Length: 338
Image: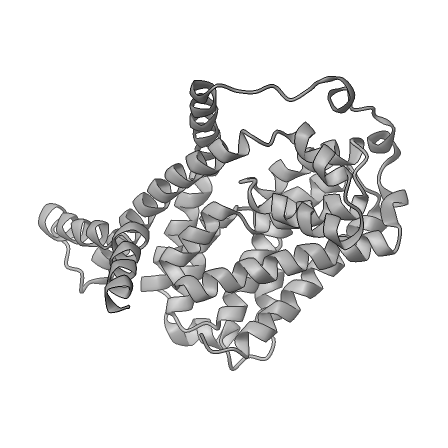
């Protein structure tokens, strides 16, 4: 048993945390740049370089792997599978499908439209819309590398529960009438006439490479901004200030973190470095996760896009359900010691 634990610890340290990279960047900062790790500036430079390289390495490897698997499940095939399952099972499958689609909230909306056009229940499509930006397999491993497996797994579980619950509520109250008419009236020709074609191994590899390139192009700015803010919080903003605003002693910390997160626009990969810095400053796990969830699931740009697809009443209900769920999850997490 000790041997297995030792192997697991080594893999976690070298492959997920990338301790070799951490030490390499220390040498770079001290011997090449001439800064001390004891200084705020040197520590900030280390934080920025280490976290940036680590995220890009993990992201590229994981997106390639996930995209290769995903190439076996194109949207038209997925819609046929999901369309056969009704009720809570459909919501669960919609949420689970969202976890294997590495999209930000804005990128998920066109898929949401496609599924709605294909005739999927609106509750199932909303379960997908919630889970897709909130939880994906790549983010799980990156979360694990920063916070450990307990928090990473817990984040995935509550994210899926929120997606299933949100979609189920929307489905239960028959809110499909609040989807814009042009979306429901559009006929999906792909769903009726185009069969999924089988890709060769070479085509799947090329597809996966293209997915990596496309996603990196979309998220690199947000990753750099997120890591930069994380470095600033980690080394320059005193813990007392952070804790007075969103620390555990403030009973409104989760609500504040959720409200602050909504106007921002970033995917989970750009949000993780900020969350890491807040966590290291002593901010509660629930408050940190509430911030992450609000940024990824309820960003203002994605809500503007969604407002073109659904009527205001459904948009407000969606925001209310998700934000309430995020706040409840945040307070529950703050009660649990990880």
